[in-house]
Length: 383
Image 1 (cartoon, rainbow, N blue to C red):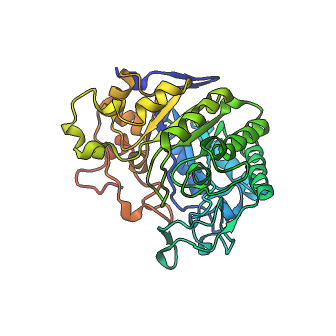
Image 2 (cartoon, rainbow, N blue to C red; image 1 turned 45 degrees about the vertical axis):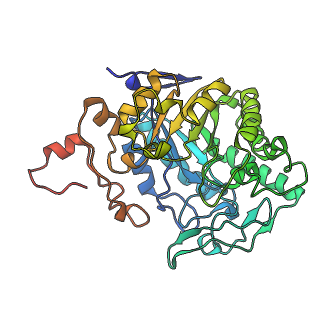
Image 3 (tube, rainbow, N blue to C red; image 1 turned 120 degrees about the vertical axis):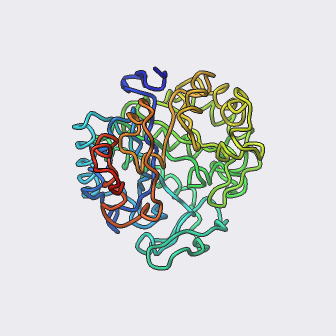
């Protein structure tokens, strides 16, 4: 039996396996960011994951970059999320909320006309999808946060953390990756500030560290707070020239916080390391590539890896000691019983990305388990 399917002790939480359902934006909330009942069904269907990390959820409205994604700023949102966590717990699962403030990434048509904010006046030269206009250029008119306003945003994270705990989540993951607001503060190209939040690599880490401290204070337990980072990733127009200098300083501070975990996103998919197909890379070499070694050598706690993983590559990474838990994303979209399928080598149902975002239950909650699929008459449609 693969060690992937053995129990793992995440501090005071016992996970039944090392498989993590990763956060995936699906645009199923209301335009006002209120989670919907079908979201409770969706997460409960996938409760056999060792840990579920929710889709990115904004702590304040100007942090909503995408249309119909949920928030955790209001009582109505908190109450709706409580229905989700109750459904997951009833099904035997564990769920962390991923808190996501997109900063300069987004467009006003996606968040009710709220002006986006950023560390500096450096727009993201990228496109974003909107419900009515399709792909549009990201907003170029940004509100640059003053020093006092940065602290206000940090406070917003803390208040949102209180609501997440009250909603019944088992913990929170701060989204500090993918070119979103904490990542924008880390980057030497999107953060041109000269106050306490910018300048040197150490000062550029201040925003993320202070947010984590505020979330820890709000929750009352550092080991229920995790963070996701993506050193050097090129995403949403984010560029970093001082990767090792910045993340070495950051990880030293993360060690001091005694967090639940550090999750990382690879700079590229596994299939593009060194320009080679994954199958062409000799066994043992792929797990020595950045950031697997970089983070494992520096961070003293639990490490979660993500980036186009398969069961086989996750198992190799685990055996090589490169990470402890492993995130699967798209495979979970179409396989609610992903753990069972991987554990028993049952085939995976391919996802139909044409039905991946927005809309209702179709393409969201109608993918069958292997047992349901096997019971269907031969030739019956799947999904």
